Length: 109
Image (tube, rainbow, N blue to C red):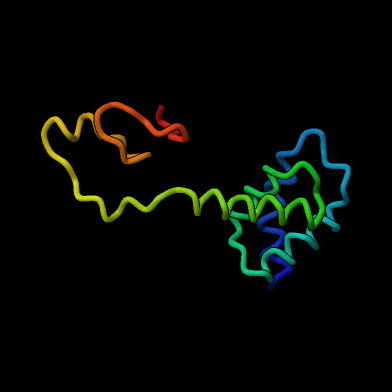
């Protein structure tokens, strides 16, 4: 079952690669299996395959952990009450700043 799930994660990604990776399919499949065993979601693994520069355990694990740290940096704004009127127009959902200014790390700036 794990082998089948790993193939479902890897096969579409592998087919989209032009030119094909120099790393062996079986080797990358083993890495994908290890990622699934470690509890990573298929979408996370696909993103890591896209983001990594080297198809090794270390390279893919680095990409997976980088995803986690980037998600942790995004503040949770679910507790911020919705605004009305002119405040709503000048409020940035990404960085939580009013008045048309943005924080230096805001992606909307």
